[in-house]
Amino acid sequence: MSFESEFFKKKSVRLDQLEKFGFVKDGGAYVYRENFLDEQFQAVIRIKTDGDVFGQVLDLDLEEEYDAFRASTAQGNFIGQVRDAYGQILTRIAKECFETKRFQNPQTNRLANYLINTFEDKTDNPFAKFPGFTVFRHPSNSKWYGLVGTIKREKLQLGTEKWSQKALHEEVEIINIKVEPERLSDLLKISGIYPSYHMSKKTWITIVLDDRLSDEDLFALVENSRTLVAPRTLSNPNGADYWVIPANPKYYNIDAEFAENPEILWTQKASIKAGDWVLIYMTSPIKAIRYACKVLETDIDNKGHRDNPKIKQLMKLSLKQTFLDDQLPLELMAEKGVRAVRGPRRLSKDLVDYLNKAFPLLKKS
Image (tube, rainbow, N blue to C red; front, side):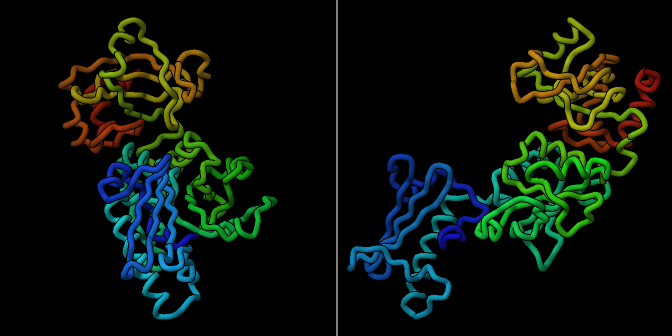
C-alpha cells in the first residue's frame, strides 16, 4: 500500500472538482504540482479518471525523486517535515476533490447502494475495537443479515487455492451472510465464497467482494440472507407470500400490456415463488398500488422475451384485481409499514391483514 493510498481510502474522485483545485488534464489523467518546504520540493499528483492516485515528491535542488520519507522506519526531523508537508497537500486534495464512499471496493458500494435504495435498511458499526466492520440489519427485528469488513486474505479458509505470499497478506473486503445449511456445500464450490470468518460455519458463509461473484448472484444471496433472518410473520415458506414491486409508468406501459393480456411475463425478482401474490406499485406521479397478481410460474428462461441480456429469468403473473389509485396510495401503505417501494419487497403483516380484510378477492383466490 502506497503512502498516498492511505489518504484516499474509501473515497471516490469528483472529476468536476479537479480543474477547480488546480489540476491540469494530461491525456487520460489529471496532474497537479505544488512546491513546498521553501521551494525545496515539489509534489506531483496524478489522478486517473477511474480515481487511481499516483504521487511523487521531487527534490528541486537535486532534480530527482525524493523517497526517503516513504519508509515507515525512516526517522529524523527533516524526513518528518517532508512527510507532514506532503501529507497536508494530499489531505487538501482528498477533502476538496473526493467524496467519502461507504466501503472500499466498488462491488461493496454497489451492494450497499442496492440494499439501502431497495429496502431502506440502516447500517451500524457495533464493534468498538473493530470500527471498520459494518452490519446490515433487518428493520423488523434488528438481526444481522450481512457483516462487511476487511481482513487479510490468509485469514480465510482458502482450501486448495494457491496465492502468492504478497496476495495472502493483502487486505480483502468481505461480507458474511446467512444461508440454508442444505445449500452450503454447493456454495462453497464457487470461486470467491468461503467458510464463514468468525461466525457459525454451519449457516453462514464469507464472500470476498472482488467481482469474482457477479452482482446478480451476490445481490440474490444477500437478499436471501435478509429473508432468512426476517421475522416469520413476513415470510411464509409453506404458503403464499405477499410482495410488492415497482413499475415506472414513464418507461413501461403496464396498463396497455394488461389490457391486451391478463397474463404477462415479468423479470424474476428476489425469492418470489409460484403461488405468491405480487402487487404492482405505480411509481411517481401515481404512487399507489394498482394491480394484484398471482404468480403462475417462475424461473422461466429469458429466451428472446426481453432484449436486456442481463435478465436471465422471468416469472408469469396473472392479473386478479385492479385498484383505483385512491384505494392503496403510498400514504396508506406507509401507515401499514411499507414506506417505500424501490425494488421487490415483502409486505408488512399489517398491510397483508388490511388487504385480506378490505379485498376478499385476494383472500379467496
